[in-house]
Image (cartoon, rainbow, N blue to C red):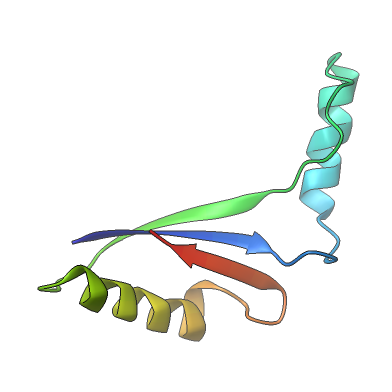
Amino acid sequence: MKVRVLVRLKPGILDVQGTSVKRALAGLGFDDVTDLRIGKVIEVDVEATTAAGARQRADEMCRRLLANPVLEDYTIE
């Protein structure tokens, strides 16, 4: 079963990469961008018989390795 994990910095955490990309976009004429944050998408194929089981395994992966709980939030699809 395929699981998609979206990892983003928590609100209030400085997103240096997002700030850099926002500045670069402004330099290209995209002055209407008011905020930009960078995250990551992780796709995992999990051997599970149910969607709930796949979600549970993905959650465990996130808590142990894929996301930094101090700095990042994640959602599982």
